[in-house]
Image (cartoon, rainbow, N blue to C red; front, side, top):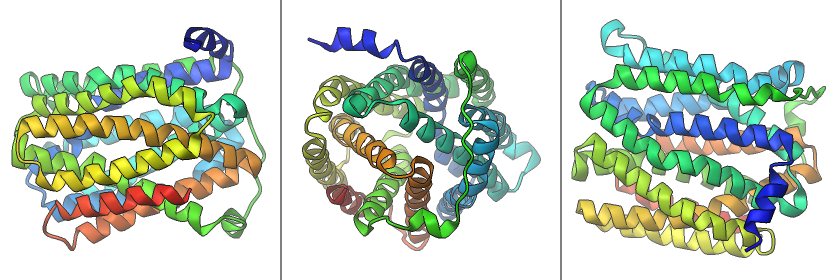
Length: 373
């Protein structure tokens, strides 16, 4: 009802407008490929434990590089931090898709990916925190999600089709071009430079255990949904790249539909919506223990798309609220450190567990940690 007028208001915010366009193009590029990475590694005959260690190394690198990434952002600008992440990500994809020919050390590729992630997310979160408006932050997060999800919806399908009929090399070339294009909109306005001085002790000073547990839960749940669940459904139910892409796209489509509703009310009832989403998400992970058919995968992932809308918008909005009430950069460093540490713990534990479905139990438990936020 008031949505159209609100969108017109939003697009007057030049800084956020540039970020929206950049994130949309980047999301489209990554959605074409990210869900297929663990499956690609397994199809190259790497063991499941090796793949889990790969992700543990990736997210450990992300944690260790957060401070250097912050220093780089401080010196060159937060948009430049996002820009620097792109060539590093392209190098990672080149290494991944030439892995069979050149036999690169797989954990070196994980380190490269971790550095890229750290540079991007530090730049993105700080940039959004600085230029979003507290009173309308839920809607602003919603716009980011909408713009991102519109492109994200078709990405996995296109990626799956390219993999099925052409191959990984064509997908790598397409993704690389899109990633380079994604950084262009960021520099239509001046970058920001903040002088940052802090110690590691200061990052954790004043933070609460509840915030830490919620961020850790967020990381664990993300790790399971982006790596363990795709592996499980591909090798036990789907066995097809195109179908996996369709499943991912369907989940994103339902998420997109509900973002319009959630973003509007998130500025009024953020914590209530987050609690509903957390409980719904925990129940969905419980149901996933019993999924046996492709139809059931489509149904459960549709519901998962809804629960992710209920969680992600109020969770991100509350995170940015808390960042602005303290030192923005230090709070973002704290958030990123704990989120990525949660992922590291998950994948190290999973190397000791033989059944993928045990991860669903962790997913349900991690979802309930949102209730502490």
